[in-house]
Structures are given as C-alpha cells and as structure tokens.
Length: 170
Image (tube, rainbow, N blue to C red; front, side, top):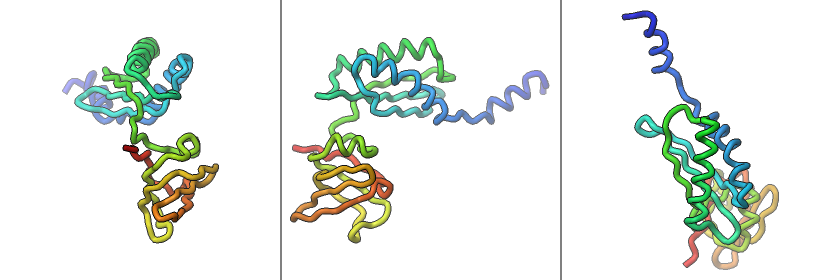
C-alpha cells in the first residue's frame, strides 16, 4: 500500500462528521437572513443520506407560511450557504412550515398556542398518566396547565415533557 495516500484515506474513512456542530453553524448563518425578511426560523434538521446531507429548514410567521415564503427563504438560504459553505459535502435543501401538528418545544411555543389543543407525552407519570390530550390553559416559565376532558386539569413541568405537538383541530 502506498503510504502517501494510506493515512489520509484512513482518516477520511474513520472521521466522524459532527452533525450537531454543522447544524449549529448553519443555524447561525441562516437565522439572521431569514429574520431579515420577517420570517421566523422554527427549526432545522440535518441528516446524512446516501452520501449527501439533507438540510430541512422549518419556517413560520404570524398568519402562517405560504409557498411563496418557502420559495423566497429557499433562494435566500441557498445563496448564503453557497457563499459560507458550512456543509462539507453536497446537500439537498428543503424549506417548509412546521405543519398543523407542529411540535411544541418550550415555553415560547406553549405561550404562543395557549387556548389550542395539544398532545403531550410526559417522561414521568402525572396523576398515573404519561399521555395527555387537552387544551393549553396556561403556559408559565416552568410548567403548563392542560384542561382535559370532563373538566379535569393537569400541570406538567417542561422538564417532564418528552414530546408535545399541537393537535389538528377539525
């Protein structure tokens, strides 16, 4: 084996790309661009598939996101990422809204959607339950209160929430 290329090949094969580091770098680059056009960056996901990266950008704004908003953000994000080049390989960019059943990630989201129905999964049981569907009655800085069917209510600390999403209201 030729030793001139053996070591770089070994390093390339065993080099683990830290997706979280790349994701944070991408977020730092694109968030100001998205905010400058009066749209909010809701979340980003970065994964690796078939030798390429998949970058999903979720955006939101008051009144909802249109297809035109997604196209505009896609053009802006693509342009800045082409210049900054934070992703070490080719990538596919997807821009969309978080959806009607959007995830709720913390106090800001729960406060914004107070009065709406949510599905909440607790880490530790609350009143012998870990799964709840109810109306977000209150959202404080450390906990939420859900109004459940039959006029029951439950208070769940944010640190005890494993997963939460808005319920689609028909």
